[in-house]
Amino acid sequence: MKHKSGKQMAAIARENGWVFVSQKGSHAKFRNPITGRMAIIPIHGNQRLCTGTQRTIMRNLGITDADL
Image (cartoon, rainbow, N blue to C red; front, top):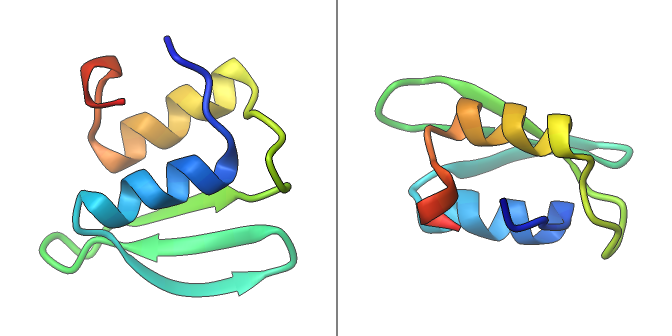
């Protein structure tokens, strides 16, 4: 798995059609306009995400390692 930062994951979410909804502190909320599902992405500068956190975000976004 390629490790990504929160900023990079947010960009990937936008590329896959997710829409930015709001941000509270360092957590950005994205919504899928088709399904209505929500995904929370922590953005802490360019610091890479922990493996488990990244996998959870990927699962919520519906993307795989190949999509990175």
